[in-house]
Length: 162
Image (cartoon, rainbow, N blue to C red):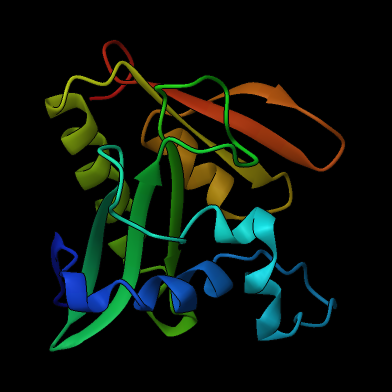
């Protein structure tokens, strides 16, 4: 599949609402939550007033002229927060565009950008049952902490990321 990775444009910030909803991991057999779930404060932290802080960075994947996925980071108090100054990841693709390598390319593009900007680490939270755990490990994330349901993963941009 042909796709292009590029920085998000200001007129596309509203797409992050779609992608935060798409990023919600729903185990097999569990009903999708209503879209209004993205209005909860623990999800709004990922998208509210995006690109107002220096740590707000976003890349999108497009197929043709359609944005099909996004990866973004912020220094925020989210599920994957480990320390101030360490940006946390969010990533998602529309279902029909998964398993084509687009997510991996979005991740590596962001990791390269963070390293270029001088960040030492980045983090994320992921449910243990999420198939994306394998991809995160592949691009250099390691398990930093865990609870019953999820892992907190960290990528050391100075040593682990290739």
